[in-house]
View (cartoon, one colour):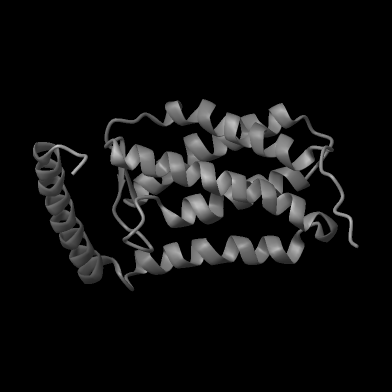
Amino acid sequence: MIIPEEVAKKTDDVYKILVEANQKDHNIWMEYVFLSWQWWFCFILSIIPWVLWWKYRKKESTNRLLLGAFFTIFISMFLDSFGTELGYWDYRYELIPFLPAFFPWDLSLLPVAFLLLVQIKPNISPILKAIFYAFLSSLIGEPFFEWLGFYKSINWNHLYSLPIQFIIFLFGYFLVTSTSFEEVKRR
């Protein structure tokens, strides 16, 4: 074995503890969360924003906009999972208990808010939009979900999210508005 036996044993022991903790968490989810009003609220927040965006989107820009949305989803889920694993925050009501991230927030609310801001008033400065996005998500969204009891900040201050959300919006914006896309030629 390439890995020293002592390291493998310690890793196995920690893994067993994690599996046990996850099973307990899943039992709590099945008993208290699944199909509760909080679960249904998460379900609705995961679906309705996308349905509304799909109905009112700028149809000729759908693919380009979705690229920005997927970028936002990827970064948000990565950072959310990272913060959860490091113990900065935790979620009490998850749509799916197998993800350490808050599904409605990362996969629906943040990307759809991004999409709306990119589409609405295209002549407004992306810096102003990024400030608004960061303020909306960090100082309104996070405290609102904490107040509802969905989110619990442990070692995190909402102000820390401001520059992160600002940067996420700007990167996504410049990705979506880039003119460097090459046209695919068909044979």
